[in-house]
Length: 153
Image (cartoon, rainbow, N blue to C red; front, top):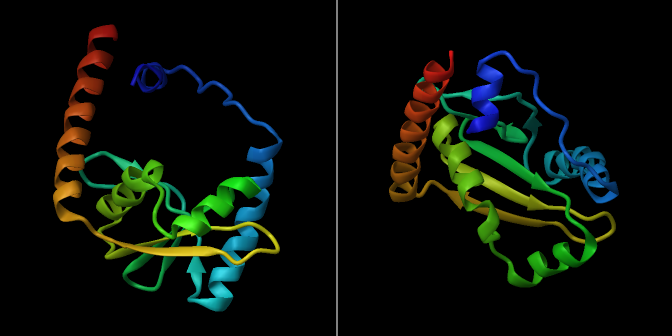
């Protein structure tokens, strides 16, 4: 929140941390998107999506009229773990459901991709109870963000 307050007050965002694994993941995302587009359904890339209520998300692509994709290209051991468990990793529930909240879409296909191995594709549908709670928290966050920004103006 404090970072966003600073940006709203005119400060430039700071550079974020990167390493080889992160850089590889970014490069492989295009491969994963192409694989999904070829084997499942075409994906259209999209930028940051903003909801009318002021919060937003950046899904990795739109699928037809009702779907999204969220692509992860983890290190080998993590991808193997995801393949074994065959479910949406807990770390990504908020992101996947948040994207559904922001876009109003019906499903989000979570993709874990590692070159040379089969991908994991987990279809996640809207969890309206979770989305309702997330929306309430986001609205509280936005209100507090606005209050802090005004206090420092």
